[in-house]
Length: 208
Length: 208
DNA sequence: GACGACATACCAACCAGTTGGTATGTACCC
DNA sequence: GGGTACATACCAACTGGTTGGTATGTCGTC
Image (tube, each protein chain N blue to C red):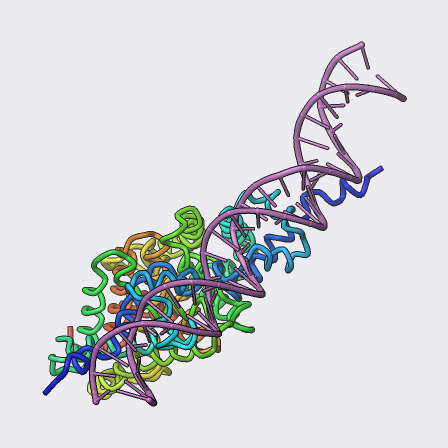
């Protein structure tokens, strides 16, 4: 027979991670106190420091958790369907544009928010944030490379560089959205990104 | 006759504003305490609250101070020289790329950093940050518009939209630089931005 | 002698982190 | 299958230091 304890293993940890993503995206990492996190997760402070040896450790864990949940989302997303690798890249941008619907705090990037605050004070968190962004960018590289070959495009830029650039545009779009209090401006920037990719691969007039 | 007091009026205020720009770019707004600011400016807490009624008010003043100093820098910059408006826009991007040399904390944007942290908690600061970014973007609009006319370029994008997009790319580039601890990646993204603008205005093959 | 520009001393609230404890489960030996 | 030893998951109360902010005083100028 399964006991209650077996059904409810490290419960507080998962609740804290979920709360961290939600609260830190709204308030930022520094402005979020351990008590804030505990209250949001309905967990005591003792439980917090049982699972995380410091607030910084929670930050690292939250960045890794973010990486895991977002990569699961993107892996199962429909933008991988097109045969043409360029179409897959453009479909990725379209998918990101679709994700931009909703309140600003719900559509922005956890690790982009965090790294801006702690890049000088916490190398551990910064590293985890970099791994999240760079790792995500890397998932685009293969399609970009294939598209470059298929469309015979050669510039003084690499697939890796363009992949990273897409993330820069998205991160910047989040900042503008926060400044304006509206995601419309972020969508606009993402459309510029889409147009850029189209222009890069349309140099010989291949495809409309 | 000019007295010493006339030459050196509200001294502590100016020192605090300078310190704010320096310290907040490194630590972020929330992680920077009033005491940090006072220590960096070599000023007492009494002086701080004499000139600013709260930490939030300092944040608003710092954003406005940032707007003033940066717009002075850009107004006197050499990128306005070219006759061709498109060249002026590209020279602006080149100028921004040149500004990307140095330690990450010294080349990033104060208001981009701040707004990310306080967009939900302090509408006053967020507004001042938005005014700074949007105002700077607006200084590019005339040249972009002229270039669109000169090169007879028409897309489903406006000069204002492209101007804002340049700021999004730059802001995103700062985030990546912070994540990597290196401005090289930011320079790379700015070069993609330059290439995008070139492609937008090269649709008819006018200019090389 | 009033006023602006500071300095000093202080406060209540809040901060990250620690303490000593309980309840429950598990591993292993006999 | 019962007992010892240990591990895990959590909790309430507390601590020392820091926080933004205040109250009051001083000093030089007009």
